[in-house]
Image (cartoon, rainbow, N blue to C red; front, side):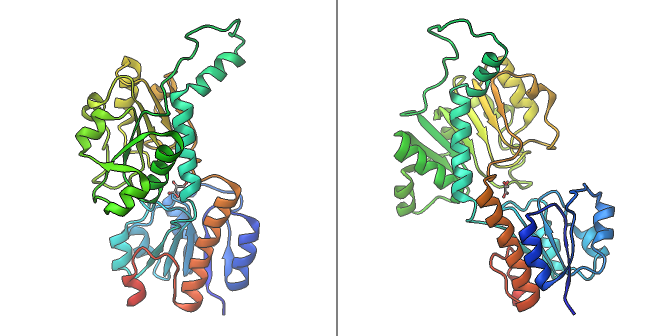
Length: 326
Ligand code: DGY
């Protein structure tokens, strides 16, 4: 008998077809937003689930879904997983690293350019019919090439952004990370390690690429924003909650920070109303990894993890490999 799995969100039809070769599949192609109770209900009798970050997997759900053996997140981030609870319950967790690194780094840079060079703000102005002639200071923004790029969180995506900045735009790249990179990796990225205080005070553009956890919650709040140059821009492609969005909106309104580019938000898809009211912020709906080929590669990797584990006892990208060993 084939194992049963749930694909909790809408997904590429061809990936569903592949999964159906191996599993009894319950899909959610209408992309219904299930409550935790509905998700628990849908998971009854399922050995695996493909999740996308909107599905919280915690001890209450695990206790109510005793058949569950693997949760395959179609994301590199996994802050929707209570990993210790999953490990304790013997449930394998997987994510989708690597396949989205370059695409996400591209987007980080795109958001930085759009923010510093005021691209969306000026387009709104043009579309509103307000443009009547060239002016010396019309939407004059901040320089990107040759400026100082600060990166908070220096994993694979941070390193990709550093290379783009150093090699493509001649930027001085500084970074801060929980763990300092080895000298060879620093050299390959053209990046210099600094304290968080120096990072905040020195950079012209700050890119946030660190994972979300209780420890990184509000890594950028009122105190950190106050340490940044008033001419600086802030770009968050990491996770909502890393920035205190209310404090950020206050800084943008007060002009103590020049501009922000945000792809992720506290409590998304809700966006803090004060951010919506700011003209000097570029807002995008969590699309940093959204190219057709990268999203397909992410879906494929999540599916391969389900097939690998439930059919062959192996997984490509386990987050709690202790479960595999057991
Ligand atoms: C991830 O994979 O964690 C991203 O946020 C999705 O784009």
